[in-house]
Image (cartoon, rainbow, N blue to C red; front, side, top):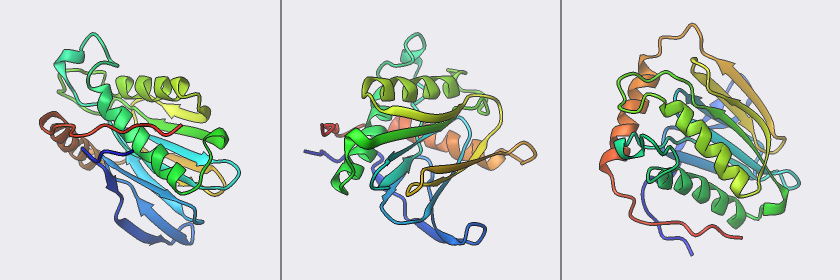
Length: 204
């Protein structure tokens, strides 16, 4: 049973990607998308992380984009209360994949992000906390990690093709990062002031 709550957003940003000649979904902070179609899922990450999870046999897969809220109470416990938000983001994607027919035993994950690009947060290692959380979650849930590109100091643009598992990661070294930083800072503010109104029971 799923109790709907904070930040459950199925990405509405669909477009045609001319570079890859295919339909695409752009995933913004707090969003996710799951599909069984041959398309590309795209996101830009600074301190946030994304998990790309797919059924290796059926090709059903999806992507989320999230961060743990910057909470002073978690200063000495990066997987404390704020991890509930990351857990929600992971479980809502996994449950959507299972509802679409994916099999948990066939799951593989690829994870990206967690760069040090945000300034002025009370917890300065927000990217590190996000990366630590997603790795620990997948380990706990026994989901194999097929690839990862975490931490560092540069934002990333991630292209994920669920049907094949192909990922293209582009480091954004020469880009003006104000848009990425302001978008993630605004998302972090929403996380701090919003209440997580429901929990997700992870289907087994």
